[in-house]
Amino acid sequence: MTISESAYNALLSYDYPGNVRELKHVIERAVILCNDGVIQSRHLPDEIAATLSISPCCKEDMTLDESVRCFEKQKIINALFETGGRKIETANKLGISRKVL
Image (tube, rainbow, N blue to C red; front, side, top):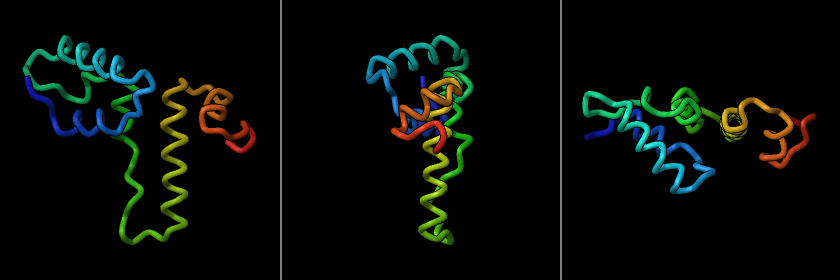
């Protein structure tokens, strides 16, 4: 059994609020869903696979301000995925008000 580079990167990008137990369950699920011996990002839960769709913020031609805004956007999108789109819960998770979100 192997893991594709995209699935590996998605697993590394995710925050794992459930710690190592959550990672263990994700891997077990992927192994069950995988039938060709290669775990792909499609075998991962949506909230983990979604981390691949977010563009990286560190680009050489970006200003510091642009990088900070990109990073903030990325954190907000990740938090929204983790909370199932619940804005109040997302704002609380990020330590900001719903109005600021």
